[in-house]
Image 1 (cartoon, rainbow, N blue to C red):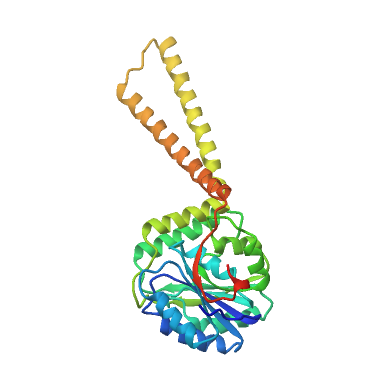
Image 2: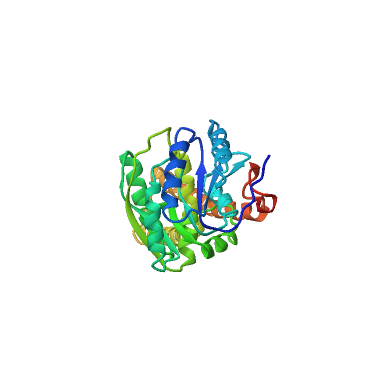
Length: 320
């Protein structure tokens, strides 16, 4: 396999790809045209996240015809966040743009992101005004999640934003030093601070294929975001335990008062069973929340690689 020599460039673009063969030629053309408005000294880094269609074959064709196109093929599907991380680990740009490969985020917005960057902002993220072609459930769940996460965390994570953004080289360097297994990049970037600004846009409808984010993956992603940047669920478990103990103590006082003062025995098999089931349910939920945090600790302690590159066209010294 031919490996391309790479020097520092003005701008890098990281594109995670999962079963996007139909959109890749159009995406490449629009990206090249858009980034060329900023500089001709750029690189496009496509990360194939275990695609099962012809995405990788298309990437090889693009790379064969353009020395500014690079690819990483992961050994399996590691997930969107780790695919982006793989690209960030090898970029050489003074600034880096992260954009999905499904054409819902318009490449034509990149020059506007760069203009904002030139005003002195280290992070410029694209904030959605409209989300075309998405179901009410997905729009509502996204709206609810971002605002819930903002309330749960001390980090000011921008609402209505994805990973489409432009970041300075120093942001990339700090992200490389944050090797946690359960990545939530938009939260990590917000946590880093620095000067951040938004550019508003209308997100396009998906034109090819179907989304790789199933409901299960969305829920898992939401859990990653909450557990990575908030301890409030654990605090709620503790508070709930105290509340139930306090209510149980009041019930005990009432039972003693009823028996010794009112000379009445409280009967109620039904109430006993309901109370037992309620407490049992609360305990299971509490154990589950604690288990989510422990699971993430365990993954980081194992210290496995975040991803494995099966094939790439970078020079040997640039391998992830």
